[in-house]
Length: 371
Figure (cartoon, rainbow, N blue to C red):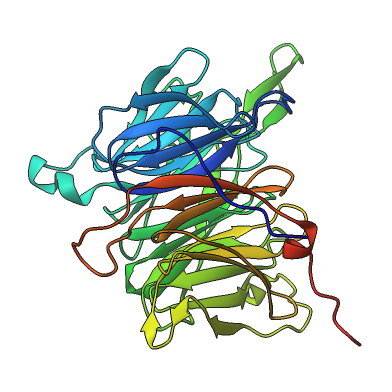
């Protein structure tokens, strides 16, 4: 069987693409939404079933550096992080944006360029929590349904600028990659309803417990160069880290009491052409098989089986750097942003494009390891 060809979506961004994410629209059989953000300051939605452009909305906060949505939150909401430090919510049904909060809200105007919200992630299994991290070396937890508008419910100090972030599928942990090759692990316990007894009349009432977040581990990356992306395994057993030096590291979390089944951390080289080394810009785990895809500044997308330490398939060679990746909900489609990431400095380059490609089972299914 021949490999599927990537298909370019219409009306792509006009400047560097910073994030891609499929929006869970309640298992619609007629529409599959893909959201993207870019340095042109616009949030875009495409329907990858119909291969059509749905909308473009300028978020009025300068370049957009990050984005998230969640199946636990309303499927009609997308959240963006701006270079001005803002976290904004976009209601797809009404095309209405609103401000959730700001990084560097108490900073002077001279510090505005240092507060960008560079990473956003929804807390899985939470009804309302969004995590953000920024160039101001702060981690914030936001309750988007809180009556205390524009104020984070929790703030933690980070050891440096945030370069990447992810949340575990069980909703209990966040990992933030910062400057100085530091990886910070934060334990998050979302708010829940507890039943208390009113002593005056013995009536039972429900009260909301506030969320809790604590830094539980900070450690050096096993890679020697700056982190470009970081992702939890679907099992939360470990993390995958991509660096600017064309390497991926697989690390485990035994310090947190999480079993690694006697596996050892390791790293491997990738996205290299002869003597030229390209950054690993993004990592995306397959939702079913737990294998993962990497996107490099060499313009290629490759899938890997981390357990068997094997390359699975080369999925695409696109015109320029792969800036970001996203699998859809069932893992049968992959979205890829072809967008120059300036690893070779200022130069002429192909225009930005968003491609989608059918994924074959053999390209993502784990290798059978001989005993």
